[in-house]
Amino acid sequence: MDHQISANDKEMSWDGCIWIYQKNNGDQSKHNGPSRVPVQIKGHLDPNNKYINAKRITYSVDLDDLMAYATEKGVIYFQIFINDKKKEIFYSSLYPSKIADYLEKAKEKGNKSSISIVFIKLEKDADKLYCVAKQFNDEALKQGSAYTPLVQDRIRIDDFDKIKSISMSVVGAKDSLDAILRLSSGDICLYGKMEDDKYPRPLEWLDDSKFFAGREVDQTISIGEEIFYKKYSCIVDSDGGMCLRLSPNLEIRFSDGKINFNFKVNGDVQSLGNDSKFILRLLEANMFEVEKRPIKYTNPEVSEELRKRLSFLSDMYDTLNMIGFELDKTISQYTEEESKQITWLVNFRKGRANNSVEEGLSRYNWKYGDKYVPLLVSKSGDKIMLDNSVYTNHYAIFIPDGKKDSPGYRMPLFAYHEVDILSNLYKYDYDEFYEQLDNTDINVNTGDALIEFVLTMISVYDQNKDMKFLDLADYLLSKIKPYINEYLFWLNDMQIRIRRRVLQENELQLLAEIPEDDTCVAFGKYVLLGNKEAASKKFDALSKDKRKLYRTYPIYHLFEKL
Image (cartoon, rainbow, N blue to C red; front, side):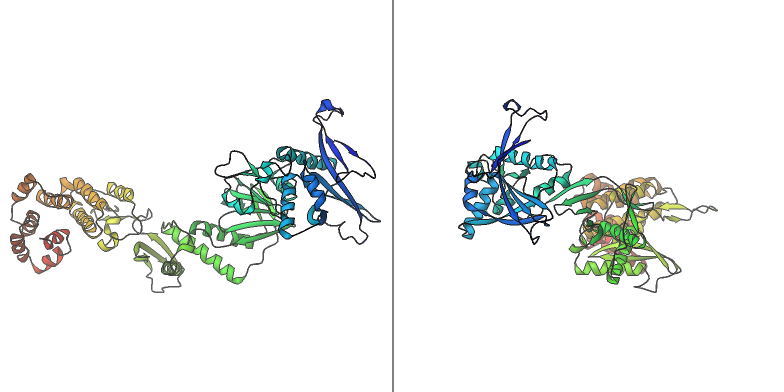
């Protein structure tokens, strides 16, 4: 850089310029491609330190001067304040679009002679002055003057919500924080493009704007050996603050050497539970680690009410994790009834909702909304553990096989639930159902028990019309075919088919050939053939206990529709 600023200069509106050369080789000639940066300098006495100790000030500038600067590339305006002890330099980069904004605001306010402009204290560092001058020159060269179409067509604040992209270029910024600090000083102009723009346009400048810059960081945050987060957002602002956004609920703010925790209930159970555990651990510790780098802090003040809230959220997270219960919505989206049901379940597990839980293992059908989540409840002393009795990997069901020290024959866990419950589950994992059927011990000793499960799955279909339960029934029936009575197989196979479509002639013929020695089989045969009179006679011939039992079977559902 070089300067051409004359003492006692009388030039109208400008006091000279700073020359910026392309190469830092001492060659200050036209061969080094110099750029001229216009400057204006005003000096003031400040005996009472009204301005000299500030970082930002506002000071009045003549509108006549601004209109003169508007005709060219603008000006870097310096205000110098002096007293007996020191002097300080303040500056404002008035590139064309910024001047246009000030002139427009003066007109809106009805100002006739002057307008107050923000000035920033200039660090006494030649490198910083170079960045200011070079940045100004870059912006001014893009814009030309305050009266070019580009500047006159700049994007006003009322249209900021229509902007599709924003760009800026920064001279000499070390990092994103440095960039937004420079941005907030007004040195840098933002450029935006809206839907149909072919080129970016300057954005309207607003004094005292606050800017933020953020990025995603893939680093762990832990306390001791426990990792709570594997990534976070780091956000810096133009006031010099920094924030680690760990989740939708939790932020850690660093400002003026202090650390503050900002916790709000915004996210889902998973994030809230993890955040609550993290904060509760923080209350016991005096540091956490980011990628094993310790960050120490003074224990934050937490109200007893918040501590209880965090404990409950942590308990809720543990409770719902136990039963594999996942929600695809945030807590704020729960209905009042759903919130009550979850609160009850947490209190139930903590022994606060029901003191009548039996010692050992029992079952309970918890309802969420209008759906069921069947539970296994294990109580040992004061400790209560929960598990999902449909999908658990911690328990299995066996029937005796007569062998010493043998657990017995393994059965499908989900099929042991009542039809009403299976018809209205909160979650259906059909792959898990098939896996349980594949892991079932199927042989001559288990066939009769498994046919009952086929009937259960058909009954579930009759209640909720979920065709996948017919598929499950068909799948299990085909697996047990070699181990059950032939006629029993065909009756159940046909009652699965008849729920899918009308039986064909050959299928009806097969049913007609089934012998009638067994009254139960004969009843099923005539129901499937559609002969209500014959079916009614066979049903009446059954014992009272048999009739009661058959009313619970899916064949009776078809009988009622005849």
